[in-house]
Length: 290
Length: 240
Image (cartoon, rainbow over all chains, first blue to last red):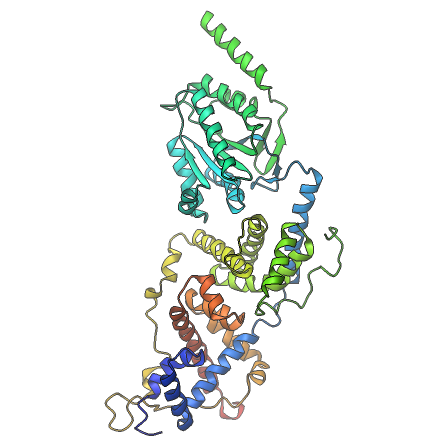
């Protein structure tokens, strides 16, 4: 080793990886080479670093992931089978292992934060694919949905900006809400949405929303409207705080199918839209007579 | 398309997990993508054989248990199957898959330990880094003749990596040293040296610059080297 070598061992050690990676400027690389030729310590050091790289590369040998890979393969097969069983049900719900059909209007009953969170899977399944998603509801609920999505790892801001995720508020008129959603859905289809998902948190008893009868009428008409679009609509029903009447008439009578826990089921309590609206009107008239 | 339940040439194979370092030619990748979109099992099994083991090893960096790592990887595959239609080929299929994993693993790790913001662990500034080799091993800057040169130079380990690896103890030491690294260093050394990715692939998957990648790699390799040196120096002379 000679004093003329401007490179000190301590400096060589700091540059070792840059050297091994071939990332040093040519003159510095040559300095390193020259230094190593005359310095046994640095030669041994570099050899050890090369050993470390080679040894690390051998570590993965012997890892057995066969069972784990087979589980992933079964998961793949289950997805295929589920879709083959009923080809119309080709929309992954994102809650449990359920598949929905375009045009579905579903009620999702939740009673705590964990169940609310599980409902986010409905949007996530679509956002991970190419679907266009709408978060429709009262402000507080919409903010909570976005927050939960963010925490669960969705790039909310990016999707909002890309128009893949849209937040929609309420309106005092059920007709205005319905036509607004219709327009938004039309625009989404026009911009190439293969499927639309709408997650609803309706503003029962909230300012700037229709009254209870108005929202019920709106819900009944959504069932019909949903059938006109390649869409799946999931309405969140907070069973811990909504009234029994809202759960019964809103949740059960206006949704052809319901989701509870991880189960999607046909709903025997569903009342066809015309009939539901007629009953609603009759009751309102009787109410006036009292 | 594979018939569910049948085990044929497209089934997962026990020994195919070692090939993730091999770059996939674009034409082959295009065909694989087509087959995946058609729901062909063979294509999915190919992905599993190429990447599953690597995904599990990478997931282990972020989450506490191998059970959770496995869950994160299974979730990643669901994400891949869901997203395959919107994958536009701006990155390689491999990079895209690993980014899904990293995103999910980060989210999972954050949920697991709400108290420590995970991002803090990934901040390079949070790890100022130590010198690759202790300054005490070098002569002081004021040394009249040889400032900055070895005072206690490393010794030849005397055996090839293949020989060294026959020792269970050596394997264990390296694994432990890697597990003890800060996550940002562990990510880089896992992908570069264990999975044998190119530096470009690593930078793409992790979203870091080449320079940053080399700094992290250097710190990681240095710590592994030090751990091995400590082990060898601690051994009685005859067994070295």
